[in-house]
Amino acid sequence: MTAYKRGDPIAVLGMSGVGKTRVAAMMRRDADWFHYSVDYRIATRYMGEAIVDNFKREAMKTPFLRELLKSDSIYISSNVTFDNLAPLSTYLGKPGDPNKGGIPFAEYIRRQREHHEAEQAALLDTPKFAEKAKTIYGYDHFICDTGGSICEIVDADDPSDPILTELRNCCLIVYVADDEAHRDALKARFDKNPKPMYYNEAFLRQCWTDYLAQTGEDESAVDPDAFIRWGFARLIDWRAPRYQAIADNWGVTISASALENAQTPEDFLDLVEKSSINR
Image (cartoon, rainbow, N blue to C red; front, side, top):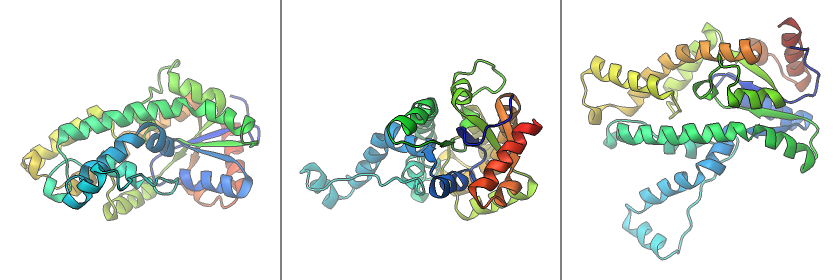
């Protein structure tokens, strides 16, 4: 791999919370880069209708809102932004006790599969948006915030993986690697605000089986937040080698601690340049 040429397109990947979106927003705000958010694309282009339909489904349970919806007197939409992806998380949901906001595990799996297809499509859209950034919007530079679950839908060891091939052809792939301290911080943050996420299905099913066996609970009695907190701790260890394989085979690595200290676009690009030179 040749050294990174400053200003060329970049795709950042890593666990949710390591700083991907922060640095992408900084490049957009302070250096006039086009910011392509894969999660935003998923929530608007590929899962927007399902998200709004879920809102409507809940509204129809309330007689007052049901009558207004049926008479087209109100309009329900999703206010997704780069900084607020809560509608997508809410749609994915959490499995377990419906009295605590849970949904049946089978329905949870169905929504996870919807996300899988949507994420594949949104990632494959990256080259198109890199081109549109130049030809339509007049941006000279482009950064893709891949979201936290890219490692679940690609095969880093397959030299012909279609998603990674498309991504590398248009961007330098930059993995933001967390360390033990960052992992502890991510777990603590997740404990305070356990949000729904996308998981590899085989991994998710094993977690569910293990959790039920460990707690002795029936599926419908599981505390949704307790389960996803328990699963998130496992998820961090599950994803780390998969992210690293992407970086080793397809891109470069920078540390989350170094990224924390990058307070300007130039700081970030310095890190990227050094990582590509030292690869």
